[in-house]
Image (cartoon, helix red, strand yellow):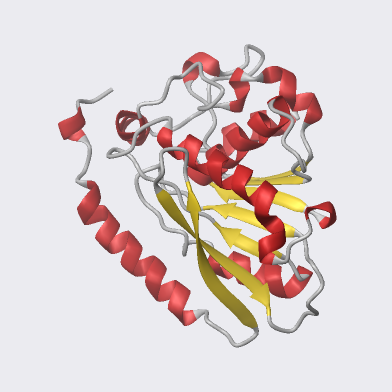
Length: 249
């Protein structure tokens, strides 16, 4: 891995990334969606923000809950990144959607992002009723790229710990799940730009063999996964991560 000083300055990258996400978020606002923010307390007392989306057109009856995790290499991203997806799910399916937050590397390396996502999920499992959500109607977790990693890790942990109510669905878009030394033996090593991977790993500093980094370190839980949808793109460097995960499901 490169030394810490070789990692691009995250503050500069975040200024651009956050501005783009804010612009896209503001452009998609609509009177058809009710939005509000809540604070969820983490295990160390830190409060992460979640944005809650609900259709203004549906009845007041409880709805399924969809939880979304943003991506961008564990170092970038905000809970406004998946605003368009959240609004669409609220309108199309009458779902309550919570776009959660987690603290970013390198200031907050592994396992803080994974712990934050898990703490969000535990809180939502116990407090969904405060959002007028009914987990018996559906409790779905999803994310993209690094967010898909965190969603997958949390789902496997939910299986190990018997989370109640249980997650009923998992959605992974271009998940980042593999390193060379944890690829299942029957699969070829995935292709990923070495420089990009080194920067991500230097910032995140994961324990490669921990189930809080990759679900492939918890193989027994694959047989107990909820219904899972894995989305990949043919030329995406993370394509093989998703393909290998899907074959293990």
